[in-house]
Image (cartoon, rainbow, N blue to C red; front, top):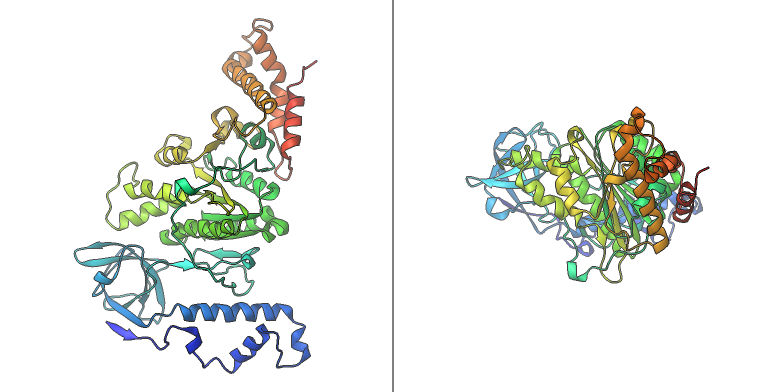
Length: 490
């Protein structure tokens, strides 16, 4: 079914913006028709300007016709529609008109026996056989702007912080963008200070690098992310909370980000109770916002918690569309989608900035070789392993230095820094090998000079690796403290 739209699609041809909108347009141009008292309210002027720009952008996106299909079946969360399947492709956006007047956003996830399969972004209450389905955007986009800094949005790029409408930028950024071509990308830049001395020294991260934080539940992934947010020297921070608990999302924004961190960050939230499409799109929107700031020439720190919940959302979508499982219930499309997402982080092309990506991975059953962990580890440029046994003995952050690696080392360090790190790793490895004998009292002092040295430096190194959640240590100070920990013990 095809119906003409009520507008021509060009904002300049739509003239009936009079009455209450006329005042807002004049306010945005600096002319105040209501007297001097209105000119003092800068906040209202800003909100009116943002609302007007949003209206203009929305009018520009109105097509010259609307195409409708009909709901032919509903099974679980999958909606089957007919009549327009030749006009659709996978990833297209549609709107289901429910019988209660509600419009349900949905996405095409596949086709079966001549019908298009849709999954909704919200509940299907009010949707039944024969309901109209309107075809929406072929390639959903968002329009970020620098004024998004300090805001909290959902996976549909709608504000959820009560701060008024989001201003719309001039450039449309595809939500599911493609990474820059490998031959056109710059190399990773210099060191990025993350404020955590164990990472700054042993696992140095460079601008444009992508690292994973691997840990089981309750071992401290969110805590170490909050330390990065508070202490990093990146220009802009983009946080994606994918499938996060509702309670922890607000705690992260108010306690961990704080006013200073929030002022230079954009936070995208999709809680665990939302649909799999919303949780998956939260990850896409996070990278799209980061790409916008990267293209402005800024160094962006992109944090995502967690990639595992993104993979779980993709698994739910794929299974609903009829794709067979491959490994531990995960479908082949999950492992195809992971590199498409993670490769979007990294250095930009010449003239643009970088996206330094820190992605948490929830390790199921503390098995670091489970399918998602194994796949993500092979894509990223390094991994930080958090271990439950270290957390249980009270050392935070619970990083297992010997099982963690940064692939930009040792090239990013000076020879002196590399010598310090190598010596510390050698002592920690020696102590780890003899730990059982030392605890049992079976090792006799003087039997091995290297073991004696490792025992002498064990406690200073443990103290060095221990850091409070609200404590920050810059790069140079971290190496000075490591040098002091390796000094001869009396």
